[in-house]
Image (tube, rainbow, N blue to C red; front, top):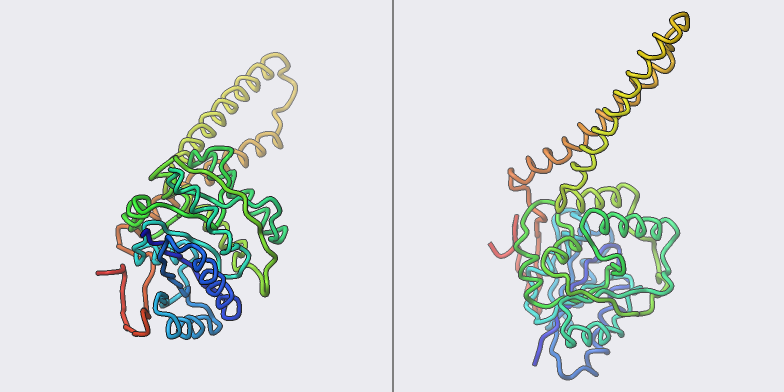
Length: 321
């Protein structure tokens, strides 16, 4: 009998999380060929989300609760859940009920067909316009920077096989980016259509700042293309500057009485100065992340773990050390 591990990052979900767990339990009753367990990772939520997790762990033996010491983000929470899981298949989904747990059989069927990873595709997303815009930017970034196939749709509801998880958890640097880790492990990935529900309550935890940080994580941790683009832009700018210099000299010889333009000179200085500062900032971002990684900054710190009605207090930089 194969085992399914459900990993759910939790933030501001004290009211929605019980419905998600109940839906998983109800669905798995009909999938008797699988056994399962659930990992609920509290990303230092300011409400009583961990209190809800504690109650669920006390009620059901196959639920493990993990609580972070501070907010580390959704991808760090996913990594913590992946490291604690031991299922043959691992399914990751949201805590707000928008990702339908009762359609998990569609994802599992694709894994059984031979795919290594399966992402849910939504025909009609119920996110806000801001969140949809962020998803489109993230889609473009992963396609250009990480080489994601253009026809592959990426979402927070996905399932992967055990060997993919084992490769993902080898990544111990400070800035995890889950889709980059999946693409690093395999390209045998497919989509399956599922419904996307409206949010029961609250709003998305992704602010503009968090979305920008997520995008930076993606292309600085798994791609050097930004540096190559910067090199290309620098070369192009230098070429334009060279042509403009020739044009200025020729113009001076053809018509010596025409004064050289001060405004055009300032425009060129501002343009090239801005380009230089942009490239230096990009290089500095890479160097800064390398510095933080060399300092062994943890992906997350676990304050407490609850499993099978037993509570174990821990202080960890990396799990299972």
